[in-house]
Image (cartoon, rainbow, N blue to C red; front, side):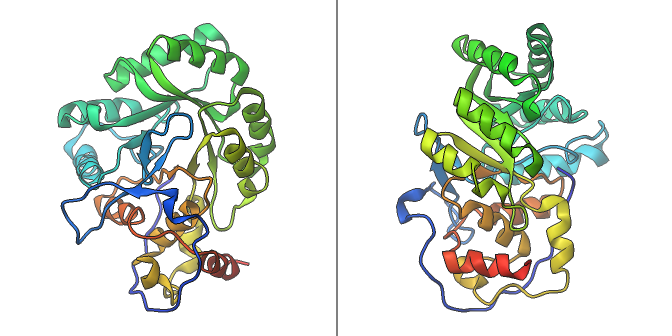
Length: 310
């Protein structure tokens, strides 16, 4: 995802409402630092393995060179990511040098065993898919990934069959299908209905809510985990709230920035398993991680945000 701007504002106090999802929809991982709060986790429906609700994308942010100026901020991003209790990192062969950089830094930091690593297949044909995955493993410096996804539905029938074979071989633990635009959601829904993958990944934000119509109910019915990309709508949300104070109920929801508000909006839908905002900025990583602490938004708070952008 492209880099986004962040606007941190002081929050005021107001009344809350009923939770959109039940209080048992997530649990909290232990945290030694109560001041920062625990990271919430949610179950992967197929296995009940729990994932921290804040993950990280890598498009744009990890497409860098080898210099210290390029990589030092990303080392700090990853240190904060793991220290905050997060585990899920999403990448793809098409994200420039992102797989190389992630592989190098995970190995350097000794973080691979703490990572729920996700990448993608974006090839046409089984042989091309196999070759692409082998190259991803080489770049990522690993012999397996936790999640292997078909990127934007490219040759999805062939590639999902390959992913199922790779799962049987122990090269991947979960299968998935992705897209990033509302125009692709009907085709994504058809693929999910036909193949019932373990995960789907799609765009969702306060101003792009098409996934609510078909994909989210389908995921809940079929027991498919949902990852959210573009929760900031490629930064457009930040430009629309520039100079505006947070909603009066923000403090009740534990929100201290617009980034947290937008991430919590996505997380407040009960179909969503985790969000994966991309950043190469350490301070923004810390801010994003705070959205995984405390309550999700109530139905009234969600509607308040929707009304702001109507």
